[in-house]
Length: 257
Image 1 (cartoon, rainbow, N blue to C red):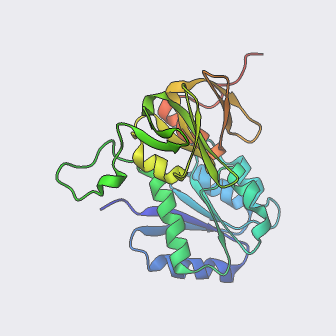
Image 2 (cartoon, one colour):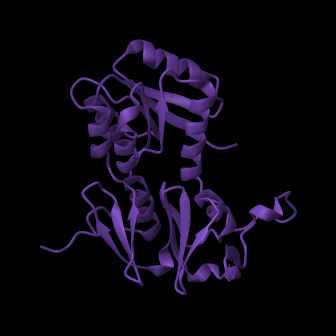
């Protein structure tokens, strides 16, 4: 059994905190490790340690939830925004939030958000367990079939540098050319080899083998440059994970003075 998620509930309204506590009590894999009524209290609790997830309201006295999110350390907890306001979602994801849940919070929606957190915490296996019941269509493919006007192109995954979602269409970028595909980004994640490919943004999948440079952004994320000179935005939350995977400490990617 996996370790329970240690969750900090941050909301200036006592009623809202109690509701989240009651919902979480029904989940066997979670534990409430604390509460906070403002942004400063959130930062203090995170500094004290022992927090895996922050359920964070946006409108709080003093520091807002988005302000607190921007000030969290690189190796800090994952954050799920829980708010009655739908107009801050873009800012939330740009600052690295895992999910954005609207009030009133339903148990099923909260559980889905926590599942997304767990997916970030637990790396996807490199290959299916031998003998397990796995859908053959979801296994990593030796070649990725992409239909084109000239026929089906079988793309070697090693040649794929990245894939992006624009206007509901996914484009796969390779060293031989670029292809529009009906695959969603999540389907690409499921079908491509786990090693080397990372979901670095809600709109981008990146193969680190093709990255030549990671340029820091003011948001706390990166702008990844590929060998072909193309750029891919890496969200703040994904930048934290890349730091851990690459063995980087905060500040090691900054330009010398």
